[in-house]
Length: 86
Length: 321
Image (cartoon, rainbow over all chains, first blue to last red; front, top):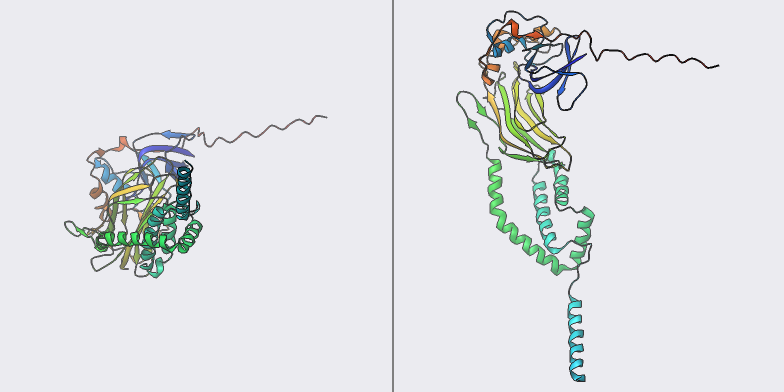
């Protein structure tokens, strides 16, 4: 289990979480919640985390961030997502 | 001398007698001025309750409860006070005359307010975009059961299409600090009674947007409904929501899905394709920064994961013979 927190988490094409923590189990996102209180083993990595159903992302050189997000996130969050830090 | 003191005693006796005849309101009976305010609101609540539709009839009880809560009295105290006033009809008549005057004075204002509520407000934008929010732009939600939510329903007409997108946004201001959240929800009800919706929690003050995009073809949209619900305890002041809008945007890039829209066995199938996702994020936020491979890293599991360290097994205690 790993807990990381960032400024923006793009959960799916329509959900952007601000200042949230995500929990990863073997690299797969299993939970998310707001970063409201100090909690053990939460790493603040800042920036943006994109939740993608893909374990491998390629073909994204010189894409705009919005295009990258459009290509790599689900339209509606459906679990089994991997976290990518930008 | 004796004569003068006799006169004073007589005056004192007469005045005592006169004042003794005035109505002394018992301590447990509500004052006439407050009773007037309560009766005004109570009758107003009753009239509002009578106007409700059958499916909202439960609100009538809440309206009366709200009046008692507003004046910090119980229904028992109100009933016992009314019993006392009914035995002193002249006092009650005075109160009702004042209440009647207030109703007459405020009837014009109430008519205007009701007229404003019934006006269907639809703001038009360029293209097919329209604001279908038909409630007040500014709402104050409190923790009371009566005023902790705003429900809205818009019956779909021919302009509602299966692939429309809905964006509900507004500025939410929590009026006091403390643990409190608001929940915003937009649902699309289809002609086969299915509901597609999205719910979002608002847990800090600021601007929030809820985006609902669901291609529901081949079904038709019957109505769009939802709510804003404030969840906080009674000590908190509540929440103000203003600049609320619910935009309906026609998504001309959407592609009609295959017949079986419920099959999501493989998550990769739900990945957006170039055609499907084109208008979504670009229309919400324009980011011009480009990314390359050096900027993006997958968050991997840690080797020495502090959360995975197993608790030590307790040592076996030696048995002392």
